[in-house]
Every structure is written in C-alpha cells, then in structure tokens.
Image 1 (tube, rainbow over the protein chains, first blue to last red):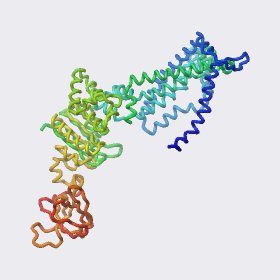
Image 2 (image 1 turned 45 degrees about the vertical axis):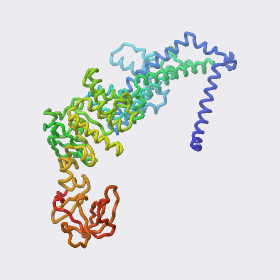
Image 3 (image 1 turned 90 degrees about the vertical axis):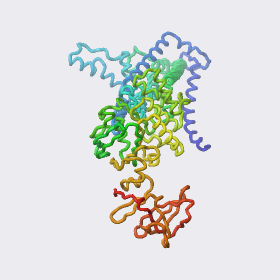
Length: 285
Length: 332
C-alpha cells in the first residue's frame, strides 16, 4: 500500500505546482491593489470585491448567467434526442455517430468561430443566399448580437452535452425497459418513467460541463458578439490584458469560481432530491 | 382442465439462424409447467414469445381464446419474472410493485390494498421502503415475484428466477414458489436448465433441445420413462446398454453388481461384465464406476452405506437388472 501511494506523488506534485499554487496566487492578488502603471501592491484590501458590486458589473454577471442558462437548456434539448438516437443505432454505427459529433473539434476553436463570422456577416454566405433567393432585400443583422453569441456557444458546447448523456443511455439496462413494457407501460411512458430518470446523471454531468464552460467563455462573445455583448469572461480578460488591473481581474475570477461552485452544489442537491434513486442505480450496475 | 395458452406452428429465426424449427405447445389453466433444457435450446425464446418480447417468425400464440401473436407486451395480461429481476433501481419496493397497477389505472386505495397483500404473501412487509440495491439477491427475487403477481396476470412467466441464488436459498425459494402457485391456483410457466428444480416443482415438464420438444409429461413419467437418450441423459443419471439393435437406459440405482463367479445366485443372470475402475463418495451413496468388457464404455452404479458387499477398485463384477427396470429408448 505504501508503495502504491507513492505512485500518485507525481500527479500531486504537478497539481500542487501548476494548479493549487497559481490558484492561491490569484486569491492573494484579488486582495491587492495596483499602481497607476499596473504594478501589483499587496496592501490587503477588499476594495476589488466592493467594486464588483457596482451595477455595471452586476448586470454583466446577470447577463452571463442568463446566456449560460439558455445555452445549457438548449444543449440539453438538442443533445438528449441526438444522444438517444446514437445510442439506439446498431453497435457498429454508434462509434462513427459519435465521431461525427467530434469532427469539428479537429479544427482550431478560433478558426471555427471566424467561420461563423463568414457565414453570418452582412456580405456572408447566409445573407447572400437569402438575397439571391429573394427572401430579403437587404442583409439581416445576424452577427454582433446576443443571438449570435448564443448560437456560437451552443454550437461549440453541444458535444459536451451529447457525450455524457450518450454514455448514460448506452449503459442503461435494456431489460428494465422490457420489464416496464411487460408491466403495461407503452414505449413513451417507459421512457418517461425509466429511461429519463435513470439517465439524469448523464444530463447532470453534461449540464455542469456546458454551464461552467459557457460562464467563462470569452472567445465566442469576442468574435461573434462584437463590442456590445461583454460577458464576464471578456471582462476578466480585459482586466488582465488591456486594463492592466490584475487585482480586480483576480477578484472577478474568484467571484465567478465561487458562484459556479455554489450553483453546482444547488443543482446536485435538486437532482438528488428529485431523483433519489440515481445513487442506487449506480450501485446495482 | 381448461386450455389457457396454445402455441401453434411456432417457428423462430434470428437472421439466418433457425432457433425453433416447428413447435406446438398447449398449457392448461392452473398448471405449473417447466420448460427445461440446456442453454440455447429455445426455452427462453418460447417464454418471451408468450410475454410478447419476441415475435414468432411464423405461427400463432393464443391466450385464453384470444390471438395475441402481434400484441405488444404492454397490452398482454401476462407478467414475467426476469432472470436478473430487472427491478427499477430508482424506485423503492413499494414503487416497483405499484408500477404495473399505475399503468392499469388502478385507483390508489385499491392499489395499496393489493400491494399490501403481495407484500404479506412474499414476506416483504418490513422491506417496503428499501431500494433494490439495499437488498439481498433472495429479497430482490421476492420483489420481482411480488411486482408480477400484484397485477393478477393470467399467467406468470418465470425466466430462471432462481439461477443467481446460492444452493440453500434456492432450495427454500423453490418450495415457497411451489406453495405460492398452489395457494393461488395460478398458471406458472417456469424456465430452467436445472433438472432437479424442474423435478421438484413442476406438474408438467417440457424438455427441449435444439428448439424441439423432446418429451412432455409429468416429472415421474419423465424420470422413469425417458423417451430417448437425450432425455435420459439430461434428467438424472443414466447408463445406456446396447442389446441387439435396441438401446436400454438404466438409472444407476437400478443397476446391481455381483461377483463375476457366483454360485446359487437368487437374481437374474448378469447381462454384462466389467472391472471397477473408481469409487467416489457422495454422502448418502458411493458411485461405483465400472468399465465394461468388450466396449470401452464406463457405467455407474450406486452402493449404499449399508450394503453387505463393499466393492473395491479393480474388482471383477457382473452387472444385472430386472427386466422391468430397463427402459427402451430411441437414439438421438
């Protein structure tokens, strides 16, 4: 056993140096202030956190939460049926199905975002097509608004919803559905009473992945949202890069992290309360 | 007895694979029928056809006078106890049992009454709020039976329900199940590959092999009058002797041994001679393995602990039996 524990030493060391220590540095910097030239001065103040309470920043946070929430809900609604469909395919078609969902990831994220710009901009593919077909006389404003940001987020995060849901559906014991049918449940009822509750752990995992990722996302709003729709991610990025206000940026990061953690705990509680058997389901398998 | 299930001209193909060539089977009301056979003989497929979980390639399934061949499982008034119970892991015992009644739209009050009844019947009253994962195999098994019984099905189908349990518990539940079936007067169709289980529990045993019914009869008849070598081999232990162009099956307990040279014997002449090659202790009996002269065949006889003569390895013996004990069987 003693030797076994030594085996985790490298990864603990790695996590310590590259994760925990930087994290602590961020916490420390969030209580510091800065000189006019951007130098960090450790004078232990909470002014950065107080500054966050200004209406401007609160509303950016609220906006971010809303976008993240909508993104999560839409990816669940789109991802569940797709994951279900893939899990029902014959075994040899399931792997290719999943790979098709993953293929966009082989291309750099930034490039994919710009590809959307080419599709959606005023002289872009979409507008040109619609005008040629005579549906519209002048280009629609498809880019640089909230809708575009939402579209970009859903597009890029959908696979993170599909994968965990697929896994939970694939692991579901089909005999339970036979039992439900035997006990008089038509297919849709069996889905509602058996499949759905038992695949909630997959939905929960996907929700957390998508929600957290969309809270911190800044590339999509940057490229597709223009100047108008700043989210927390952009705000933090700006503090570190253009405004050179590291202490405020750090404070914002900490608030974001704590908020996410809090929401996840709430969410898990809700899922467990609604679906007390999820834990038991795992034990049986 | 009234006919309850009739399966007519059933065949089943999975792809190119012919599982059941052609089969007819009738099951009567109130019978405990066991489908017995080695794995892959088609017994479970047959059971699933009654449940509606498989459709026959050709043929008809008739339940209580109604053709149910193409009726989906959820529209059939039969219930199944699955091999691994298939209990809903996110529901308590009560919720599991309530499921079928909810689907039928039974009012809450009546449902609770019926649930309490089956909980009492299966001795699960104290476990009603447990989740399946918090129960032992034997308890889960009872829940599976209760969940099926509560719907008052016309037939209860049981797919190797005791297969996953240890020997002692299996013995106990075999008796419980049998008593339950007698008490309720319900029709049970039971699938197993365990011949001992089949013999102790059934009113009637249907022995299957390669999708074909080998023999269909009461346990006593099947044990004492196997129709062919497959049945004789599958049920209990059998020795086969070729005499002329005919084959006779003899249970080890019907074989008698005598010394090779014997004077004034008061029993029939030995029909075969051989050498004892091994003696194995089995508790109530010893199994004596004898290699026959001429053929290289080994046969088994029993010797009981109070037998006067104790045989030893390498003894020369004669083998005799009463003519009434030799059963003429068809070769497979």
